Image 1 (cartoon, each protein chain N blue to C red):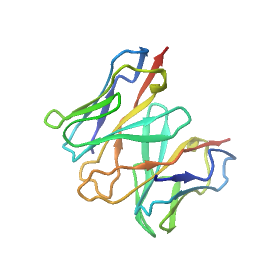
Image 2: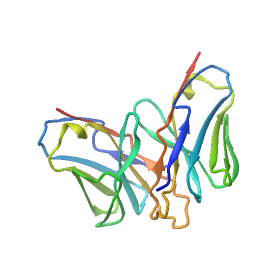
Image 3: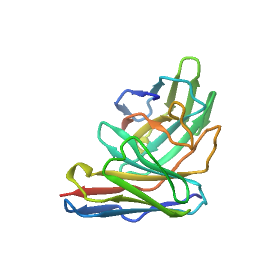
Length: 115
Length: 111
């Protein structure tokens, strides 16, 4: 079974802190994704990566950066956390399938609260 | 950008009822996904389909490519089916596997 793990289920941080969210997958997937999920807005893509050291901005990259130094690990960084970044953060991974479809495997999520 | 609309947003049913959740999208796609999210956050993929119908246990997914519409049906619903069901499609001109998600349908099945 594919396993995608995230470093924390719940996290509370203060405004202005630097926050690291870690995601690890064990299936040698090339693609990895970071989403945030908010009530009424659904899942929105922050960043994705299709190879080590490669990254692409998603729909809402502002205030976030990412790092992919190893294939299995994709980190989301909040350089200076703000209260509007309070959200559920979900990581996912998949094999690249240029002609589709793209089945994604999700981690359990990290509920981040910024106070 | 591909737009995804789901209906209804919320659905309450009695145990045993037949349930239908609908998904419409705006542009042509290669495949559509149905996902399930239980309370607590974890998301699992239920179906990925590009034509016709797929069945897994009490769940059936159908897609009409010409009408840009898909439905997820649950037969003999059970309280453990209570979850948020999410439809997702590739973005217009998208590559590398990212998806556009609907806002989800929250299903509550009462015993």
